[in-house]
Every structure is written in C-alpha cells, then in structure tokens.
Length: 252
Image (cartoon, rainbow, N blue to C red):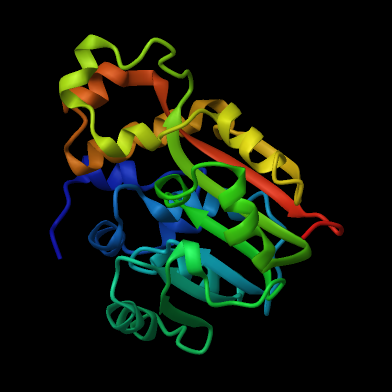
C-alpha cells in the first residue's frame, strides 16, 4: 500500500467521524471509489436508528468497505449490492475484515433487485443513487418497497447547492461530463423522495456546518485533484446531500 504524507494523514483524521478514523487510511483510499465512503457512511449512521442483527441493504456498495463498516461497527447483517464490482473480490475483502458471517456480497442491478418487498429493515446508499435514480417513479417501483414499513432509508450523494438554471456556465463547459448531468440539488432529492408517497422524511441536509462541501474538497486534496479545473471553478457550489427517511406504514 502507498505511503502517505503527514498532511494527507492529518486530513484523513476527521474528528466528526471517529469510527472511520479507526480504519487504515491506506486501505480506505485503495478501496474508495470517488469519495471517502466511510466518512459518508458514518454521517448516515449518526442520524439513523440501527441495531445489531438488522437486515440492511447497502445499495451500490462499491468495493464493500462501507458494508464492512456497517457490520463491524453496528453488528448489522448487510447485503453488499453492486453492479460494477466483482462480488468475489468483495468477498475477499469481507473475509479479510472478519465479517464473513455478517456481509453477503452480490452483483445486482438497481432496476432489477432480487429481493422480496419488505425484506430489509433498512437501506443505505453512499455515492450511488444519483447514477440511476431519475425521479420518484424509479425510487417507488425499484427500491423503496424493499424496506419494511417503519424501516429506515439513508442516502448520501454528491450534488450542487444551487442549480445552474441557465445551463452549464461557459468556464465549466470544457470540464463537464455526462456524469455531472446527474448531480442534483437537495431540493430535487427532497421532492424525489416525498413524491413517492412511500416515506416520511426525517432529514434532508448537506451535513452540518458546511461539512458536505468541506468533505468533497478535503477528499479532492487527499487524492491530489483539488486543483482540477472543475473543482476550482465549481468551488463552494459542490456538496454532499443527505436524505434520511422512514418507510411509511401505508403505501405499496
């Protein structure tokens, strides 16, 4: 694993996320995909009701370290679902972390999840939903029904504080990508969830004290991409958005 400088190690030690700080920084970096997923997962667990033995769907788990975190820290039974990463590779990480009895890795498409309605006590998703959720219909028909009534749902995604109402600003256009078309505002996500009629929102924010923006830029510094034109030009308009909801008793 790569040796990290003291300034980078200092950035990896974030007092807001003490559980994440207990994990090997090199392991986190090696297995994160575009964000410090343990920071983001911990930000959800701080505002969700979780108890040992719960069945939890970790939707879009990437390399499964967010699932490992849930199992180790809270004793949850986690289904680590991802479309892009090999479940066998994820299983090796899960076994090496000592939570093979709690985490089940699967390859799954969000549009065709192989689970019964109401099977899970909770669902979490870090840095994933924005890729494929295009509105309340997808959430309602494909994902939310997997959580039992009364179960918790926690989602965190990258996005913008303010939409570019008149289109992408000229300076940003050369640095834009198709993926960024999928970045939304917090208002968009709040409406997306409430329009399903299946959940009651408990929280919709960009993390306390501007932490959503800070986390994005701190991780860019850790990865050495903080001077990339997009990060500089979009600046403080970039953030992470957090939605926490409870599955309604009546619904699907």
